[in-house]
Length: 287
Length: 227
Image (cartoon, rainbow over all chains, first blue to last red):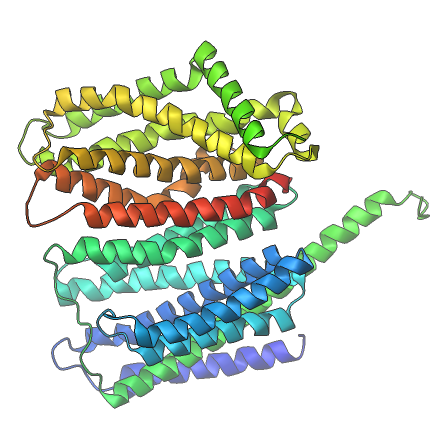
């Protein structure tokens, strides 16, 4: 940690500034929106990073719950594999799919999530998954806030309004609300088993997200709305800059998560040591 | 050890008897809902024709706020004399207790709705232009959606500082899809536009109920023992 951290921090800083240069100078000017469109290189990577972090939080929370008991752990493994397989099959069978959604993208997402599940399981111990869940929720909320702030900044000059209750905006806002309530619960809980409660809430939040998206999708598309610039094609140069920015943001998110993770781990170690010391006699002998 | 249904029934009977004698929850809920009706009536013109379009939202937000009052009292009662601790060490299944509490809350909120609906109709001159019978499944499924999650989150917020405020903070974000469905279904029925139907929203509400009832039953034992 001591050696790798400064190196990684330096690399991330260089990468972020390169990405900024790419976004502000190299990327072509958008024809209709002009330079305002460049905020897109911050907005979209933040959103993807936030969603990725929330997905990790969900996986870590599930693992924290199921790994308390070896049997449920095994059942969970099979359920995860089954969900991955069924989603992949379903993507090619179920019609109609929403606009701009392709079966291959669903399969990729499903396989990525299954892979992430087993990767996290390999890399993190049971206690560590809770720290991971806390860290990713905190950093995810920060990135989600960036999304919710840059969105209106872009929308005002382009749409002429700060905010519209469109499906993407609304579900991102609800997602943000759910994770803020998650952090509030962790903060306010006086129970010794806060991680369990928080993990249960994270699972509930994740169950909620598809329902939120679906209900708002139907709810809002029944009424006329300002048209969102969805679909259409993107200039390959723009896509290139976007992906560079996303990589830079991912590095940054990883860096922040990593340091937060270490801090939280040390904090817990300190608390444990203090609790142990309290059990010792003043002379230093164990009772 | 008695059967789970016996435990559910015993807890439910006890709760209803307590409530029947004290009328704590129902009185405070009723008064609170009445206040909501009055406050809303001052924030816009309740007799305008446009009010019909927001009446569904109004009714359900009123019920949701009032239900919080009852939900907050659900577990607080069991903390006195360490009843909940006794329950934890007993071999009784946790879900039997959860179901009893959820059904109890459902009954209280349903009584509240039965008493408040005439008032809403009177004050806001509500009249269903669509098929009115559909309001019944909406009310049942919607109330269950609020109550099942509310009971669960109330148990979760037991061991937090400022418990009373914690429940709405946890409950509202998760309840949003159910709230959208209830409000939209009610509005569609009240407005009676023949081109739209409330059926879709009722199905969505039922899905929400199934998903979250399963979630609650799967996780309640974990939450109950997390002290």
